[in-house]
Structures are given as structure tokens and as C-alpha cells.
Image (cartoon, rainbow, N blue to C red; front, side):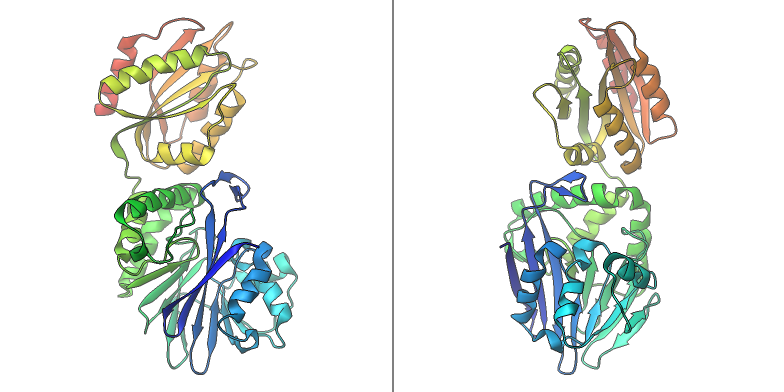
Amino acid sequence: MALYRVAKIAKDFYVLRLDDTETKYFEGIWEIPEGITYNSYLLTLPDKTVLFDGWKKDYSEEFIEAVKSIVDINDIDVVVLHHMEPDHTGSIPVLLSKMNRQPTIYAHPMARPMLISFYGLKIQRIIAVKDKDTLDLGDEKITFIHTPWLHWPETIVSYLERHNALITCDVFGSYSVPKGIFDDELNEESISEYLRYARKYMVTVIGYYRNHVIPALNKIAALGIQPSLIAPGHGLIWRKSPGKIIEAYRAFAESRYDDNKITMIYTSMYGFVEKTMEKIKDYLENNGYKIAEHKFTDKDEPLVSEILLDADTSKALVVGISNYEASLHPHMDNILNILAKKIKASKPVLLVTVYGWGDAAKTLAKKKLENTPLNPVEYISLRAGAIPDTEMIKNFLEKIKE
């Protein structure tokens, strides 16, 4: 049975957190050896009990246990669904099936057909909330704010006026299973590590939609909302320094990077590309750059999620490609496709290709990178066994300093 935790945020406000260390590939794509949490929230007012989101279906039994540790499930009057992705809604149909009455569901107008399609639910009591609609429960007033494409079109967040709390589902979320539930339970070193996982989560899950982040932040601020507590659907609850996660999202949206960092990504079947890249790496390190290295070899297969994180936070990229059957090596073909989709800021690239009987990879890689943020500014094309030209590496450094 998976570990879950229930904690009191305020006298009538609770978090229900499931620590998922079993999922290895988030969304079936992104490697997360660090794990992830699913956070649901309960508001227990004198006249109403409100449940915000659920957990992944795999953990429905634990979810119902966690709810029952606070209230009778039949006392739940309102369910707010911020986002229809099944890691937040999968346990909800199971919960509803155990109740002897149906609560009123509040969600985006797009949610109803998705609930029916995903789960075959027969729903009579669902309220489609418009942007900035409010739900006055007497002891608490909830404002629903549409935040489309963070990261699905039907995503909303909820603002609890009396608690000055923002419940945000995927927005402000992160990978990892922090030791603490709240940010003030972690030291600065742990917070720094956590924010790295948050950036990894952002670039993998929200990367394609990053242009929607700042408009959403500005929209919330324009409503006069300055939350003292941010409660996301994954990761830490921010009650000491909510501004830290807001600033982390702003830095991500603006594609801020480490000016002293270069990411190297390459495929090497028999060591020829690796030998070339090692020489380039030595040269770059001797010129003061920090190198994040990811290589596909007969002994190594890096995590794509980590490649994306390093690429997103780097000033420039060095991409080394083996020629494979008169084409790009399949791993690098895939990596370039993902980078072009998720990285939005222009990144200068040193493109390195190594060949035996023909260099098709150079032409194909150049074509693939056309009209993408990955911008080859220098090329090194070598027959296997040749030594890279130091002058070309020097030229690359000069160009990324411009």
C-alpha cells in the first residue's frame, strides 16, 4: 500500500497527499526516479464540505481512507475539479460510487463531456464555472479562475478568500516526494533541490505551453490576489515563501538560463563521436563553462527528462550525431523533435556529425532544426577518427558571447 499523509493547513482546511514512488514514467514519457505526489484538499465548513480534486485511480482505496480520516464521505457536498487529467480525477468516480448521494461538481465547461468520456459517469449535478465565477459558502468564498493551457484547456484554479489560499492543481506543481508537506519544513538546500525538480516538471509537462504562464500570473495579480498560501496538485504547499514558486514559474516562462552552462547531447555507437565530444568538452571547460553531458552509447542511456531540464537551463547546446543508415541516429532524431517542441527560447547550437562513408546526418539535422528555437551557429563534420578543429570550437564560443 502506498504511503499517504493527511495534514491540517488550518482548522477547517486539510491536505491529503499520496507519495507515488511507483510511477517511473510520468505521462508514459518522462522518467521520474524522484517520484511525485498527488495532493487533494478538503474544506470542512460548518454547513458545507468541499473536496478539491482527487488522486490517480491506482490509489483510490487509499484516497477514500484518507478522506474518511477527516469526514464521512457522505458529508461531501461539493467537489471541485481543477483539471481533468486522470492523475487528479481517477479516484473521483470510485469515491462517488461509494457515496449514497451525489455531490455537486464544479468544473470548467469542458469538463462534463470529458468526465462522461473518461469514466462513463452519469452526472446530474455539475456546474460549469465561468472565468471569475464565485461560490459563496458563507464561511468561505471561492473564486474560480480559468488558466487555460496550464496545461490543458480546461484547467482552472480556486482562490479561497478567507484563507487567502490559491489551490492550483498542475500550476506551481513539481516532481519529487519532499520530506515535508510545507515549504517551511525544508531547509534552503532542500528547497533549492526541490525547485530544480519544479523546473524539470515545468519544462516537461508545461514546456509547450509556457507562453501562457505569464498571462495567467498577471491575470491572477490583476484580481488583487496575493496568496499567502499556494496549494498545488503535486509537491510542496507554499506557506512561508509562496513568492518563490511564483518566481520560479516566471523564470521558466521567460526561459531564463545559466549564462555559464552548456549542455552536450550526443549519440556514439563505437566511440568516434564520444572521442570528438570529449575534446570539445575539455576545450569548453578550460574556457570556464559548466558542462551538462548526456550521451547515448553502448553503455549509457540518459534520461530524456533530465536532457530537457539541462537544455532549458543552458545558454547553448552542443549536439553530436552519429550517422545511422544514411540518416540521423534514431535517439538523436527523437531528442531533436522533443527539444524543438519543448524549448521555446533560441539556443545557439554547435552541430557535430561524424561519419564513415557519408554524412547525411549533417544535412538532415540542419533541415530538422530549421524554424525551431535550436539555432546551429557552427558546424563540425568529421570522418570517423579525425580530430576536431579547435578553431571551430573557438568560433562557436565567440558566437554565443555575441
